Image (cartoon, rainbow, N blue to C red; front, side, top):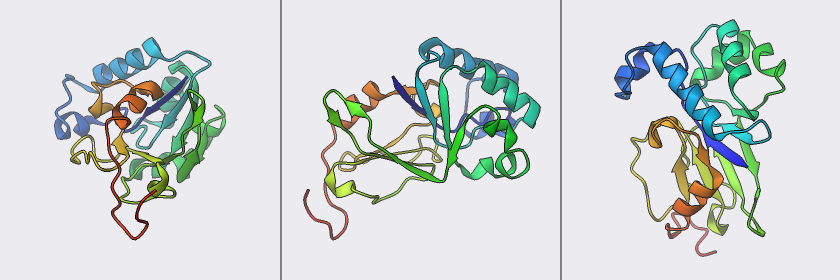
Amino acid sequence: MLFFTSDLHLGHHNIIKYCSRPFKDIDEMDEKLIENWNEIITETDEVYIVGDLSFRPPERTGQILDRLRGKKTLIKGNHDKKLLKKYPYVLSDRGIAVYDLLEIAPLIGDQKQPITLCHYPLEVWNHSHQGSWMLHGHSHGTLPDNPNMLRMDVGVDCDNYWPMPIDLIYHKMSKKKWKPVDHHGTR
């Protein structure tokens, strides 16, 4: 199964205050994120982390990644720069591919669903006028949802600190009605 998540901010003291996360400290927060992750994700599942993974030192980040089940892929977030520049081995040693932006087309039922993954929310993206989804993070659930746009924040702050399974995203997207925002017109 496919899962999507973003903005874990492992080890980030201030994110508890900034996002009103209900944790007493970073250790409690990190453990809850790990527990939720491993409760629904198996070793054979694929997980796309759409940015802002960890503020922890590289060794501790690696230890946490080793505890998290599934095949992981990281789409770079603004807070991943230090980890990727100074300690890229933390990800590469674990077979974690890293992208700035990624387009995938998983099979949902008997249909391929184009999805664009980028840490930052976009107004238009490749094939957005043809039903492609845009999954992002960065805004921690504060960006108003637009029922006329096939875009969704998959950050942990949006679903009670759980990764989002593809079927939940499909359910939410099926309630939206795409309307053009640029010159591309209708599908």
